[in-house]
Length: 271
Image 1 (cartoon, rainbow, N blue to C red):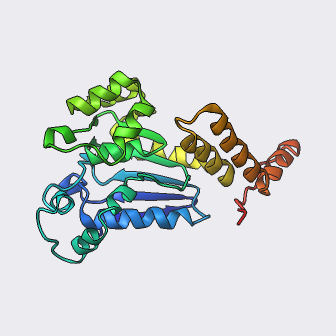
Image 2: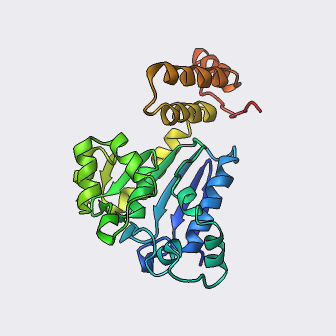
């Protein structure tokens, strides 16, 4: 069975980290395949939203596999087998798998079915909407292993939550409950374990009602303007507004509203 499972459910791509016996820890195979998936889905106009989850009910992901991925990252042992060799030839695939520096802007929804630790928590921080099991917790544990959370969390965390909360999570390395994570602003919804995936898929379907390019341009502005001075940020907002206005969907939406019917968005892009 593959370490990563990708399913299409209408306009939604469902991605499952599939190593439940290892708490869905990132293996070289999983990382290589996940990095490739993001590249592919970025070009797939039929996918309007992505849901990512973990197999089983114990863990979303425990982060990098300490027996395979981490030694390869630290170059403390030689690769064994094709997947380890592929990863070792391109260690930057880990950053791409965690959406570090991603330049595609489709909405990504996390269905946090179990504990999200280390790299698993970092992947959560790379998503846009987050549904978490009431039985799960979240922890950025790298400092306890002599490492730092270099999958994007050191940059993302203080932009997403207040400074004191960010420092608590990054410096202490202690798990926080789902309820505390929601209070901190790290997750949107906390639901019973059996409702996590259904809630995330419901959100993905709701998101997919929006015009695809409008959704992506909205996210693009938010990502690209983070931390910029207002003048530069507004210039990017204006640019994306003009690019979206050139889409057929920007005409279809108002027309459908006036005609009192549901819009038919096609997501036609400029090239």
